Amino acid sequence: QVQLVESGGGVVQAGGSLRLSCAASGRTASTYAMGWFRQAPGKERESVAAIRWYAGSTYYADSVRARFTISRDIAKSTVYLQMNSLKPEDTAVYYCGATLRSGSRWWARDAYDYWGQGTQVTVSS
Image (cartoon, rainbow, N blue to C red; front, side, top):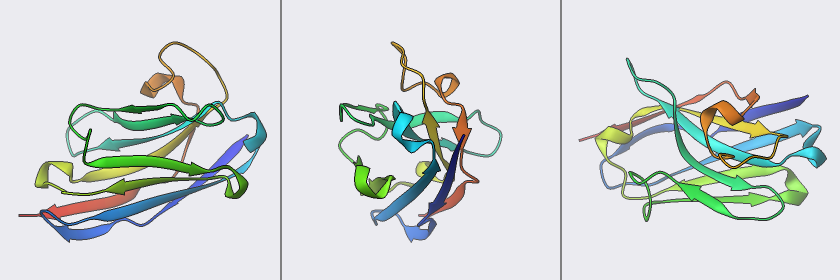
């Protein structure tokens, strides 16, 4: 089992920045990848960014590439999402996810088994 706790959400004006953190505990040594996902009202949860825990390779959705940066601190079992140049369409509940399973679509939502409680990000225009 892996437990995840997110922090860092809030309200920001368009063009601003936020940094999300997700602290993991439990079977973190077996983590294959961690990621950030978001769900806006009336929409499905979508992949935003993901990182292979030990390899360090990353994935970004087209909508956030060049604006968001995912990183991790293995010693702290924490993954971060630096969000710059935020837009109103980035407004959503952001969830941290973790998977212990490898696979070709390691960044996709259905590859993840463990989830945090979510943190609200609101971008005002």
